[in-house]
Length: 63
Image 1 (tube, one colour):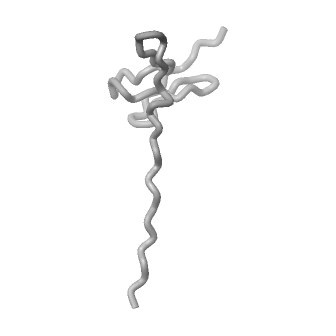
Image 2 (cartoon, rainbow, N blue to C red; image 1 turned 180 degrees about the vertical axis):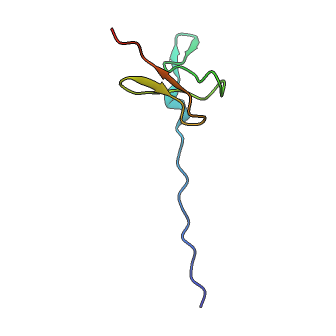
Image 3 (cartoon, rainbow, N blue to C red; image 1 turned 90 degrees about the horizontal axis):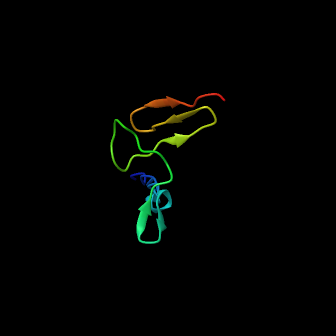
């Protein structure tokens, strides 16, 4: 008997959450990665902004 393979569910990216519509213009509330380009956003941590794709890190300035 052959064992059945387990099929992993693919993650739903829900990219539409990273954009907002303001009147007739499109607004991107998160900063985009300078290395990866358009469509790749930086994650907002307490002390830094990071890219999950390439690993780019931008540290926030302390006030």
